[in-house]
Image (cartoon, rainbow, N blue to C red; front, side):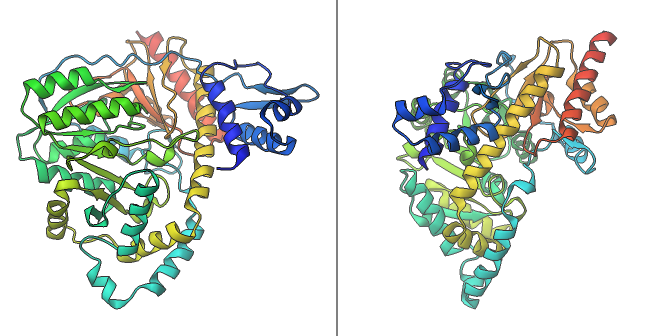
Length: 473
């Protein structure tokens, strides 16, 4: 990371933590240069970057000031989960209705689970596709089908190593996106009727997999800041025959919550104590804000209990559908099950990604992507502050592209979903994120698309609909 980016991260952290308040002037270029021992041009570059992220603004002949929406303006959601017994999962119909709402390109895609393709280096990837195909030997088209393209697996293993995690290449299985990796992993460690601990709220695709495999969900509450409730998890592991856990330890969808490094360590010790495998769904790992990359639970895994699953769909190449599982003690079983089902993701797509990771400037792209997402988050938070009811509570995650919004109890998010869709706006209503369809007064919003007047109008429309619901009570 360049020095101006480091300095920008330091200022951004002070803003997010409330040390520098909205409307307050930040140090002048001369002051910052002298105090931090960096050149004025470095300070200028940092301040330009913070402007692009929507955190500060320049005032003529006055200096730089923190924008009014740069700090959290709303309280965090409370996310109280009513205790429920292990439950059969039935959320697919509602989830499909949300997905159907995104088919119309004129709909504002606040309900989308994917970031905009405009944020990805598609032209550079096409160059890598050509290069990768030229380098492919006829033998590789067959030899790499089961475990995956050797060069791609090597590049993924290298990224693990750079993060301080030693993973043998033999442990890595390339899959059709992270969702196949998670599906295969769950099938390897459970049988129909088994109990699986999941977060609540949880990504609806997680619940759909449990529904399809006829597994029962044990919901564990998640706090917007601290992540999964480890005390509740410990009690459930001790009292119920849970066969597996499926958690997002970092930038959890839909809350954006992240466990601290120490809490991840404690989580792994719980798994180890009860010998319960964990599927670590880590598809947002590269989308953190700031300069410190997250450490996954897999980093503490000394017994092969954690099946770490991720993909390039959320950070680089959504249409390529290439993911992987670092399967630990289950790697061979996952590989064999994949051979019995889909056999292999596209070898040309894998070759393209291998070439891009080696030659395409992946980390440079990621820095640009993170800055864009942070600016889009700031714009959505500012719009929510302008248009949503005063009692609204909103998360402000340190990465990803989702906000979890908690409205007053009288708001019905299912009715809001229907009303918003009639006005050309898609949202994701709270009940699709719960096996027992809780969180009826909550929604998830995506800021994964570039912010435009179209986006602003969508937030204004939601605000009007929210106020109309109140009048109907």
